[in-house]
Image 1: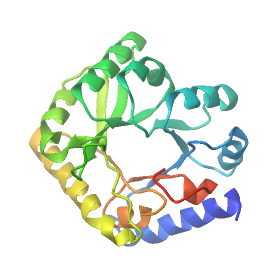
Image 2: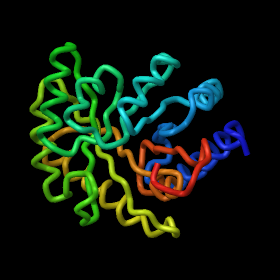
Image 3: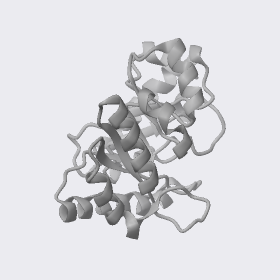
Image 4: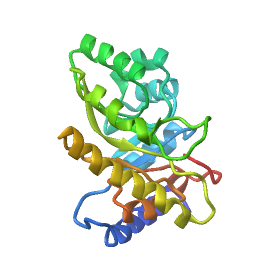
Length: 229
């Protein structure tokens, strides 16, 4: 199938999953992950109404913005190195992958220079892997508190990447943990966070059933091998 058919199917699957969600009336944002996707493919998806795009690499995003402009929101969904923050902040409307105070402070500095508040998500690692990015869940409260004290950074919510699994049902506990963590942080820090960024091509329906408000989908829209977006 082509992009038109894929996008229509994804939207229908989101609609069906929302009916099984804790709050079925809440919107679920669809971010099309465009890592390795051509400008022509992206242009087609945008013409079909794709509401946001997500990039994993700052340089790739810079080149695509030159070609496409900013008809929709651009999201940074990949790991962000501190030495890329200066280029990232002017491009992205939302940064999903803040996982350290050092990174948050770099974003704060660039936000201050541009005179804007930078919306971010706290990336949480819910599985014990040294190679995985994200703050451990038991350290999330302290880091969230530090981020909320910054002047030019706005904490909008949480993000996680569930482990790859051939059976999507195995991802459910991770998504449930993130939803519960969000509730605890909101209560402890007396803040309100509207975004739970969780769910990709292989597991987004389970994520929505567990309360996701934003799904990051690449392969199911643009094709490609079965992997994390």
